Length: 170
Image 1 (cartoon, one colour):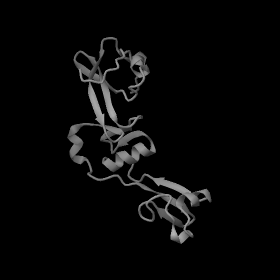
Image 2 (cartoon, one colour):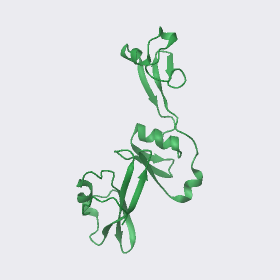
Image 3 (spheres, rainbow, N blue to C red):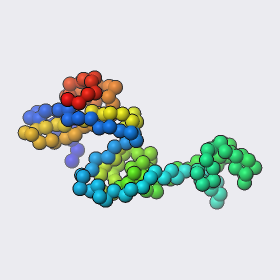
């Protein structure tokens, strides 16, 4: 179901419920009972250059895009791209319920579903300490908002939330 500002009940109240700390530039929303399904892995950066049937992969064939490739007459990957090679960045595990899956998802689309267990998103500004607001009706949380745009009051005002600059817990 899609909500817009007009569908928000006048019976409720927006309340700041805390903050979320971000050190990877991304967040996930998940029911804690699914945490045991989390695949413990590391980010796998799959990128490189290719032309025809030739492919050179970052970290496998070169460490920086300025590193000369002996098989290509000491031209760098960046030089080869200028000559018509294709730069690629593949996201094979995008959406998997894992650290690599969330990284691939936020790099390729900025947000989306993780194995039907969670939702993930980039933060827009990267690392930080972002305020979280809940819309509460009769003691029940009906909506959550994480305000990644803490430098602007537009998001909060559009929801009818009074703007405050402080970032401390309330």
